[in-house]
Length: 159
Image (cartoon, rainbow, N blue to C red; front, top):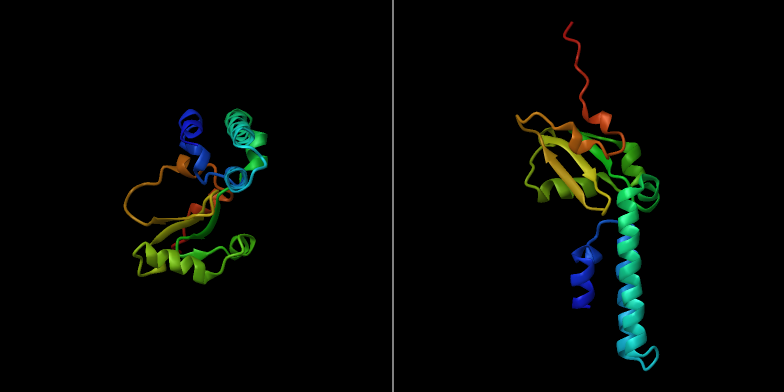
C-alpha cells in the first residue's frame, strides 16, 4: 500500500470527489478480503489494488484534461449562504438545514451571520466559511462555484 501510494500520490486517499471516495472504499474492501480470507490470494489482492490505483491515476489524468468528464464525475461547489442570507434552494438540494450551517459558523468562531461573506459546500462535502473583511474578492477563486454571480451583492439604490 505504501508503495502504491508513493507511486500514485497521496491523492489516492484524499477526499476530492465522490469518485475518489468510491475508490478508497473499493481498495479497503479488497485489502480486507485479502487479509481475512484465503481467497483471493495476497498476490491477487495486490494486483487488484494496483489495478485500482492505476485506474484512479488514469481517470484523474483524464478529469484534469477533459472538462465534461470532470463535470460528470465531480460534484460542483454550491453556495449555501452569502452576505448573511441563506440560499434556501441550495440548502434543500444539498439536503442540509440551517442548523448544519450554523454549526459550521460557530466552529469557525463567528458570532453573527453578518460576518459571513459566503458559506460554500465544496465538492468533498466540506463547508468553507469565508468571512467578510476589507479585502477585495478575487473572483477567480469562485469561478467553479455554481451560482457564483450571487456572491456579488447588488448595489442598493440610495434614493
